[in-house]
Image (cartoon, rainbow, N blue to C red; front, side, top):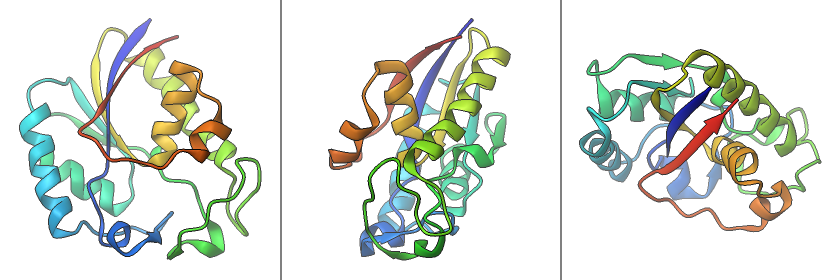
Length: 171
């Protein structure tokens, strides 16, 4: 069983521009983010079998602008960003991958949550090409699982937005 995944982060949010960790708060796309979402649709519309998106507002808005009702779309809470708990909505603070944010989860726990989604996707969508719209935790789960990149290394890297990442998942 295998699935092709085109991973796209949600487009730029107002909080991204302000240096805020939105975490499990919904967030809203900025003007730049809305343009990026339109470009995502132009790039990917007609090239994927379905779209799976985080259920957080900024990811939902990205998927809606990019794809509208042109492709079957699903929301899944497991694709959410790391839960920063009491620090959702505060200025950026990176903790070690195994340290929980107060009242939230650790990066390792977030990656494990996303990995459970990936297991299910691989088992149920054999041979499909899926677009997954998520967050940093989603990309880390994919890089860790598919490419074997240690979480500690991912945590040290500065996130750089790009127009999608391609992955092949086998189960």
